Length: 250
View 1 (tube, helix red, strand yellow):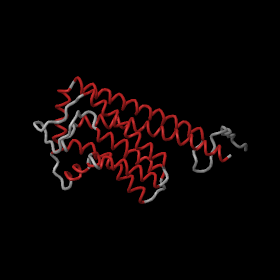
View 2 (cartoon, rainbow, N blue to C red):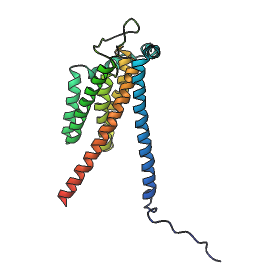
View 3 (cartoon, rainbow, N blue to C red):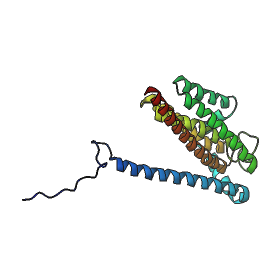
View 4 (tube, helix red, strand yellow):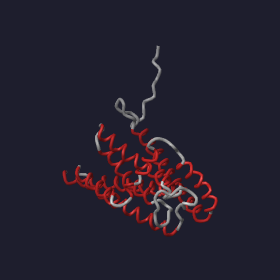
């Protein structure tokens, strides 16, 4: 009885056990890249739309903001108020400058000099861009006649400077810890703490009455785009430095 013929497997589709074939890896990479670009595009469009609402549809947006802000401030759970009150502390002097210094020194201590410089410089530049947008938009912060204002802040409110700082500084630090440190309890604890700061700062600003919810949403969108760009710059510099080291070694 003749054996059934088996079509030969195309070259480049084979791989060791547990390793995906190169062609499949390329296809997945392209799908991921398209998804990544799509998410960035959606975030940029959402930020632009929010700027339009803040400038030209303030009354409608204010009604939505008021309802969300009162809901956030009205939660009565043990520790809830304390956590949200102090989640903003790293954005106020002297801890504001101290947070930049701490990240810089921590990365230098483990010889991540590129990451130390990039984290601080990128976050400070993002803060300048955010300040410029606040001046252009000129949106007023919440008034204590509408909601509870625990801590008064000066200047315009959209987008939130605290959120921009936390996402670009602590968010980038979290990324570096996840991709450069070996797995273990210290890595998990530090990454979780940094991610928690990023997640909590938005609700914290709303709870304190320092910003409207849309101020923090706009800041998350803007800072998320900035963080994505910073990560791309970091990866590009890492590739270039790795190539230069390999050339010197050869």
